[in-house]
Amino acid sequence: GDSVTQMEGPVTLSEEAFLTINCTYTATGYPSLFWYVQYPGEGLQLLLKATKADDKGSNKGFEATYRKETTSFHLEKGSVQVSDSAVYFCALSDQAFNQAGTALIFGKGTTLSVSS
Amino acid sequence: DAMVIQNPRYQVTQFGKPVTLSCSQTLNHNVMYWYQQKSSQAPKLLFHYYDKDFNNEADTPDNFQSRRPNTSFCFLDIRSPGLGDAAMYLCATSRDLNPYSPLHFGNGTRLTVT
Image (cartoon, rainbow over all chains, first blue to last red; front, top):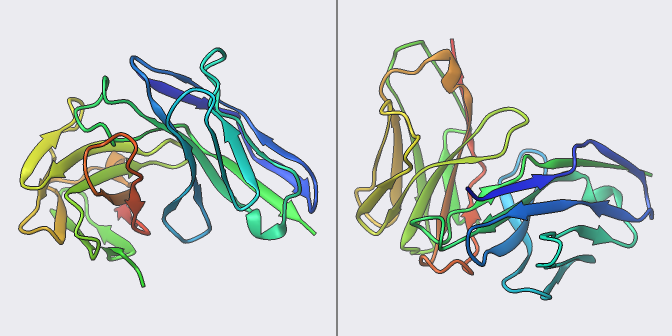
């Protein structure tokens, strides 16, 4: 079945460092790919998405490119801030797999901690 | 400004004592979901409603049920909670069943079973 694998955390960085969080997926059909972020004490929020191969999603300085050939959707940011400290979830939705095409399949999440 | 509201934020129940978690939305979305998230694990879909149509995931235990009396509200009922049901429960909504539609999450309810 469909699945998402993301790198183990925690990831600890200094402010202004470059961030990469790896995410790979297995899907039956042609999934849409998402990154969600969960700040302490809050619910999950959509960070960015890509709906087809070679699409690049971007938001708040974060970027991820949908790579069908490597089944990957790695999250990157050029210069992290303390306020980026959160848990990041890679996810996919696949109409071919789920009765509800929007139902998300999540990775386990990666905790990012940024210090000043 | 909250659009998906879950109550309570923290819930403690006793082993075997029925418990209900609630979710409300102001987005007028057609689809509502319940996810279970155990510590250091990915959120796992339990079931969803598309309007009044209920769809259960194949591996959701019978102990978990849901009600959606109207568009705005959705409830998660755990009939006889076990220690293994302690988790964060996340409610989410989406406008429709289009795979491109993002989900909007509430802040979750953390359930403790004693």
